[in-house]
Picture 1 (cartoon, helix red, strand yellow):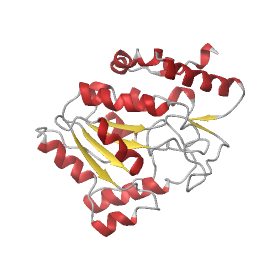
Picture 2: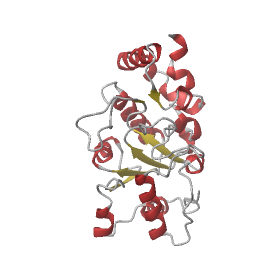
Picture 3: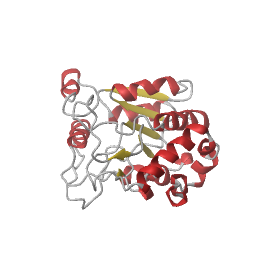
Picture 4: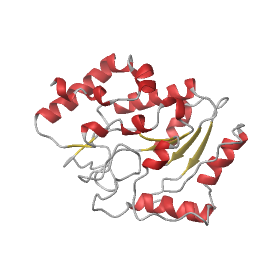
Amino acid sequence: MARYNINHYLASDSWRCVLGMEFTKPYFQQLQQKLALDYANGKQNFPPLDLIFNAFNLTPLDKVKVVIVGQDPYPTPGMAMGLAFSVPRGCGFEVPPSLQNIYKLLTNEYPHFKTPNHGDLTAWAKRGVFLLNTVLTFQANEPDSHATNGWANSHAEYGWQTFTDEVIRIISRKRTGVVFLLLGNKAHEKKKLIDIKKHTFIERPHPSPYSFHLFNKYDWKCFSSVDNDLMMMGDQTWKMDWSL
């Protein structure tokens, strides 16, 4: 099962330096064993092995300026690509509803924003936006009876949240002036991991169709608030380019 060692797919040196010990901890070894058994037994997990750490590989630790926290990968084959809210170009699917709503927010806040005809957020990741799901893998055909859409969090018990909580703590310790955009109640729980003497966080509803009406009701800004916080913390030369 050695070929299923997922940490081999973390290519970013800056992340490997700070996560090496995490991979040796008992909880991660158990997580690794569960995933290896899944693969060995022919179960289909998303995203593909080589994309599980896509967010880390595209946004090295020393380049992180904004963190957007999502929940777990899309459950449909071909959609999950290791970046929260993102789907690959040419996957054959429409832009998911939550991402469509993110585009609506950007258009409202930045009238010059041109809504793309795809859902690939790789450009953001390369500019320093760390698109982190709290759970990094998802198993096909394992619906969650507690989820409103019937499909959320099939790997919620594997231990990923212990890992991604530590990732947030590492960013908080190692970086300064990062803006954390926490979308939805699950993401709001992560604010306790952030050193507010060094960083800021912005809490907003999840952009899913179930809660998007709250943005219109309260006129909450998301992305312009991120830019304002970056400048407030002294990064006068850095303003996010949200174009895609």
